[in-house]
Image (cartoon, rainbow, N blue to C red; front, side, top):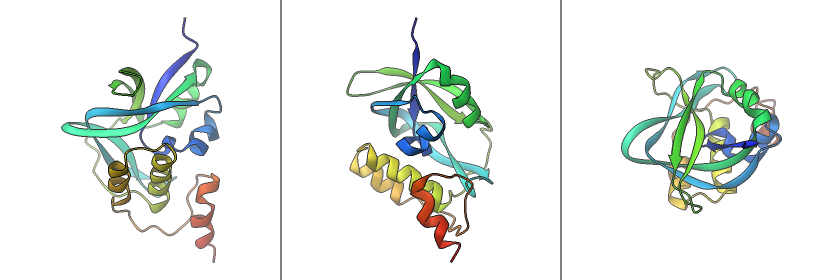
Length: 169
């Protein structure tokens, strides 16, 4: 019996310091490509002060991200972290061959598309860079418009300290 599960992160959990904030047992395994899905931003999170990432089935599009190996004991914790999302089993293309992973999709499939905060976008972009996602994909992430929010977000991880401090000046 497996003592872990595979998790595909495409949003803020791309960044190691973000996923380890709650899922301390997560181990990076490899990068993966989710074919025929697109990355979209929906809803409005009061915690992040902007839209949240989700994946939407879209033929001809791809979403890149990280495959994390997570001990089963963190399964409920990850479900709680992904509140408002539902589990989705997906098969990724990876350098290690196809891997079936758990990922999460925003539960309201009719949610309006909107813009992420600069804070949320920074965490995703830096996570992509940290794990050497394809340069063209990172460029596309960097070009995603944000909502220009300049306040403080409720997510306390070191990478956000600079943005949060700017609002205190």
